Length: 300
Image 1 (spheres, rainbow, N blue to C red):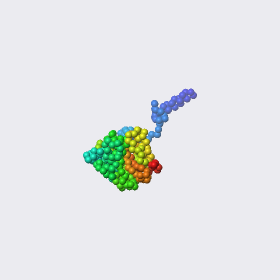
Image 2: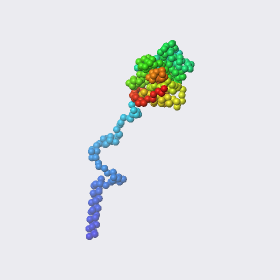
Image 3: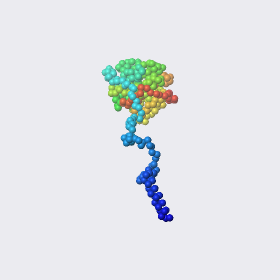
Image 4: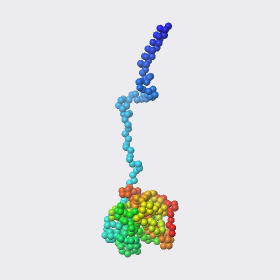
């Protein structure tokens, strides 16, 4: 009996050995985890070794651009006025620059009386130094005009308002009142003021009325005072401009008389302020502005 059982166990063991030898894929091989068994895609079995190797190669993609946003192209042509300044300087050595406001009649030399202690000399003289009721464009006696490094923090230019009712179609700085028109302000955001050293672009950041006081025509001031001038100019501005101005900047201040608030009974000024643009900065031809819902008005 026991011999028969042993014989049956031997036959069973022999059968199992034959089955394992014929079907090796039924058990994991040495070092292979049983958890790694995944369905096999039979479509790969007919691929040649060359096709299989190509599957292991990563596709080539174009390199990523280092630009985070598209670069703005310069759409503004800067006029070269240095020859004209030099020619006018031969006629009048008080010539210190040239101012141009696109799409206006403002396009002429700027003078400054050498050694002056006030701004009276050119009130009734033209750019050649001859008597004229209409005056001319002249720089504040304290401002320093030269290269961008030599410029004052606040570079002030005056001229008369010859409209008497703030008519923008009259000559000289009557033309500044064009900036009260939103379309004009958006389409003409830059002022060109050049010296013998350099042709410069200035971007407008404020257009406002003010009392005829000295707060906005201070030239040599501390960072604190300069920052307050900029803040006050923006609070009074008719338009809100997306132009950042700080103590490190230099500004151009164009000032003229106004008659909006009662003429001589309330001495007042109309002012356009602009900041000096960095060299080679790309500039769009037009900008977008918004009306200031509550500009600070003059207090007389």
